Amino acid sequence: MGAKGRGDGLSAFFALGADDVARAALLLSITKDAETEVMCKRYIEEQGWRSVATEVGGLLNDLPQKVVRALVGASLNAGIIEKNGREMHALVHAAIEAGDSFVSRGMIELSVGAKIAIVRSDCWLAVAIFGDCAAHVAAHHDRCGLGVMHI
Image 1: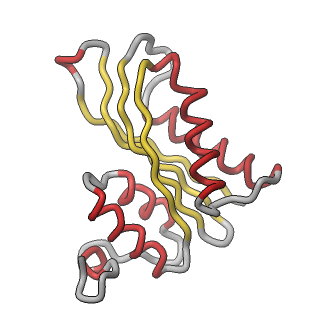
Image 2 (image 1 turned 30 degrees about the horizontal axis):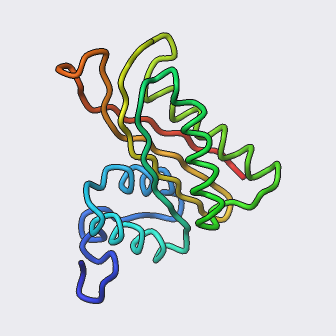
């Protein structure tokens, strides 16, 4: 971690501007370990934003329900969104956009493992998905998806 336990190490490489919630969500989604995730969350918090990360895995056909439950649960528990139509709508639509860019809807029987990050500023919400998937275990490769919605 940085000298004061904040996101100092990240700020040297990834300067975030006032409109960079999508970039912040991507950074959080690609963290590999708990220490780096905590450092990234602190850096995001220093911007005045809120963030949370969760992981999902399984067969693609089973994932929509798992993803929605994981996203909504993590976002509500972390105080990223409030339980109202406007904020739930923004979260779900950003997640759909991220999911559509993560993997094609026409694919079936893919095995997926992914980390999902949600970052929120005052008026923007970003969902980033980073993970791997394939139809066969030997063919797994990295993928990334991003969705951004105005709240």
